Amino acid sequence: MEEVPQDCPGTSSAQAGKGASCQGCPNQRLCASGAGAAPDPAIEEIKEKMRTVKHKILVLSGKGGVGKSTFSAHLAHGLAEDESKQVALLDIDICGPSIPKMMGLEGEQVHQSGSGWSPVYVEENLGVMSVGFLLGSPDDAVIWRGPKKNGMIKQFLRDVDWGEIDYLIVDTPPGTSDEHLSIVQYLSAAQIDGAVIITTPQEVSLQDVRKEINFCHKVKLPIIGVVENMSGFICPKCKNESQIFPPTTGGAEVMCQDLKVPLLGKVPLDPQIGKSCDNGQSFLTEVPDSPATLAYRNIIQRIQDFCGLHSSKEEKLISC
Figure (spheres, rainbow, N blue to C red):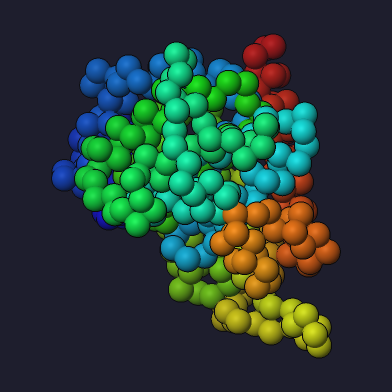
């Protein structure tokens, strides 16, 4: 999977899709559409489709295995606990769709209706869409080049009958590659609230998160904040805390201070989190008294507060 090069001009630049570093990038034509070429009509179509979606949140990570999909799943579960809110979870990790398993929807299939694809529902107010629903078996490999991935993401955004939604959470693959450029470009006219970036405390993870933050700045994607996952382990018997992944350079807290981005919170390790995901259950309701559950709920509240503030700013701009 190709990453955005260090000298990527950014999707909003006049050189987008035209620079030397753009040669060979699967998204070259997509980026160029915003830099003088004929714009992709899908961008306007998706903008119209997304009018019924109040808040759009991307969940990113620089490195795989840091718990990004786990966080996406529990963010969706946490938001959907308010039965007055409609929540949707879109999995665009095309080659590694783990959301169906985590949401207890493995083996489900997408159904076609007159108004498009119908999401698969966990609860009446929590719908899910993933390429995993289109596979014959969970073990099937998705071996696609960039253009086909882009086409799948376009179809998810334009052709799924999402209905009236309060929160659309987009679970992305690790890194800064095809899928990330596509989702930002296709939603460029539909106003993304921002990105939540997941990391673990050790420097090898933070290195890649810095690149992810740089990516967000280049494509003008607002950063809601950073979540430090697997942040220590509290023994359930002796209650002593151990650092499984030592924060040798100060962890996410120091990085956020240096880069002037918000730290939304730290989620400690809890073996029940992995067990809940394997069983397709919400850890928040399965283990409500865990320190990790408290951390999740505090972080979810901060994300809700950010989205509420974002809505207020938009309403003021519209009224002006």
